[in-house]
Length: 248
Length: 261
Image (cartoon, rainbow over all chains, first blue to last red):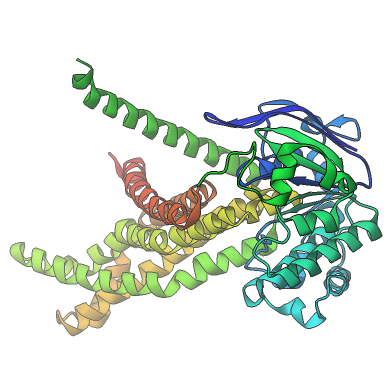
């Protein structure tokens, strides 16, 4: 279980998180929505320790992540970055098996390659892709490789940062389905940030809306359309009029 | 009154910024050195860095050294002719290449080629979240990116300097034989007879120091790159400028250390 208690983070005068409280149960798929620049990525990176919150507590299974042993803590996570964040200098299979080629999860090279090819197959890519370099792949294929890398070490918790950004609707649908299948299949806890409502409906068990540095609304995805929250209604229907100020 | 203080405030701000940068680079250097001795070590990345920093810099360092040695021979001959000392050309070319021009020219060429490339590569990795990805994959970016490059450059640049010294001396020899009518055998004897261990050793130590500086500046500015193409461009430029200035400054300090009376 991931718990965020009164988390604050500011960059200079820009107060991004102003007291975020959120709980994600084990095995749950939580999707965090919100406009651009509302701090969704900051929130996600704060949980991973990539950004240090100014105040507040983030706990994983009851333990404060700030005091957790880093390697053991990170070994429980997989993450799909917005742009894939694949390592240009490594072929695809070494990207996927990165964690399996070094550190505490190190495996023999043949075994790591076999796992990488199996994970590539799981995300719908052929083994021929394994020896290509990331620059030789399309955007959709890079996302799939990123997804394969996120699940390669079979993590308990997977984070997805804007998984469908920059993809055409069909490819976005494919990635959404893959994410849902994989999360269910692995029984992993998932935290996704997006402003793509089709992703929300495909991936989420629960939804939280981040606005003005706090969680404005949270609830099951089934309640999304009749939440009664004017902020959420405006966001999910993409209206320019409403309590959220639209910058024109 | 406030308007009058603007220039003073600007000088103060700039001074503080420079001092802060020096402090941050010193801390980064200290962290890099401390990680050199703590596992895990990434041997494959180290070998890759040796190849890209050392082996692939050989052509540019070699060509620079050859033409520098040749020009040096012409200059010493022309200068020496003013007081009938043309015969010192071989020994001065050898000493000049080994002590100063080999390491400094080699260091500057490596700075131009390697510091820029490291800063651009790491800066792009930062901008495209590859550094964050490394962290989430339980890999310390300093251990994986900085340590192998700094260690490789510290070990490879002295070798480049040694090769550059030889090629530079050969450049002087070719010009001496073909343009200045030196006897081949006499030129070689004069080169070897006057060259001392300290001449070569000091140049190699300088090479190691310059290699450390070049890779450290590339990594530091890459890791602290701003956003977007402009941020990476600025980091690349800063890395080359800082590496070049530090090479020249440390060259003076090392020369003082080795040769001051």
